[in-house]
View 1: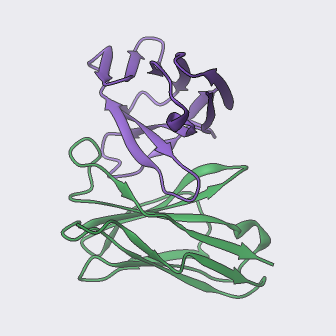
View 2: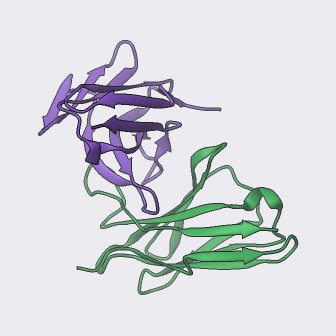
Length: 115
Length: 113
């Protein structure tokens, strides 16, 4: 079974631009979560989608948004990019979305650099 | 507010030694505690996990010890190998929190041959 795939793997943008990242979960998985990883703040939860509905949201500004499609693929969007948005963005998928019942499998991430 | 505190930030262990990483949490609603291993260029991968009704869980060379009253848990890697060199994250997830993992700050482990 193919793992979680994220595209693109690397992205360079300038301040003020917007960006869209894509995540394809493992086939059959219905829950997709997004995390931001930075050296200073570590791994922080952005949001989770289950069956096209946002189920949880972390403490990030409204510039960060996401959506999930009927095939469970998910996208996250960051508008008006700031230098501090430079990070590795990780996507994780799981079957039903309850840790302990099913495992979250992480993709390799998208490395976003904002200049 | 960091709800899961992890120490040490970095650790160097000789091959064959025991690596110990500690975590402490504040939120008593947490009810599941996984550990993740991350290699450079890769996403985190689940290593082992424990629930608070169990004081210890062992899988191969990896053991989690859990102290509910102290709100602390730790990862022990026995017979550490150079291939174990990676960054380790403890995490926690709470009731009714869906899939929202709260991570510790991470420990960079280096196992010297």
